[in-house]
Length: 272
Image (cartoon, rainbow, N blue to C red; front, side, top):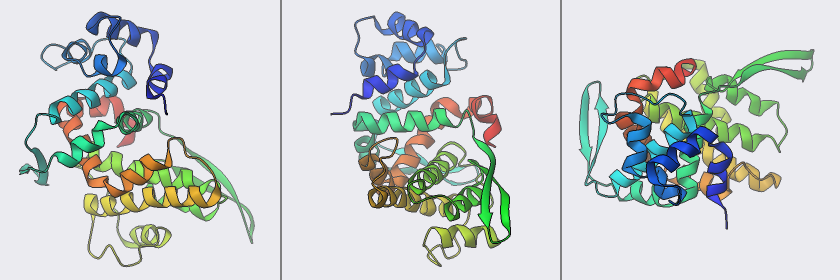
């Protein structure tokens, strides 16, 4: 059985642990402490308008996700962005609750958010018929990141697919109001490398990323099984996110609306 608490303990700072102990009591179970109203107040302030100095991004996201899980346990609907400044209620909350019921899936969402406070980019050297060539990549550029699939080894492909799925989920979950414009040759390349062909039709923006994100997560699980290479987290979680991508995206929409919206540029300024 996976010890999810150990994953949290590896990420929390000493200051984070002291804050949780002061807020929820030193003997509180970690999951209960993160989901407590006291932890929410300690991290986000009594009116939710600010952050306590010294709180790590990881603890901020952990409390936000756990408090969202507690809220959704009682909610009858969530709001869906339908158009700019237009929202509609979605009454099927059961899928969101089911996704958040599992501690490993909750941790995966927390770690996803935390990972985009430190974005990786750089240059890879690729050998071609013309010799060695420089190829730039960035975790925030889906087209360039997908291009790495053409040069990495089979054992490395699961990680690239996984990060592509992460990017789609992060973008549609945290920045649903400003999805990147992907069209033309870039869109065609993403569809080709994902094996979707013309399945996207006229989809653009968040709708396109949602289709691609689910596909990328599924390809990550499939490629890892073929290569015999374990992912950072279990294949079951990755495959589950592929099947329930829309639910995961809606969860991050709620997290963003309740806790992250005024802080997005602070935490993810380099991500947009």
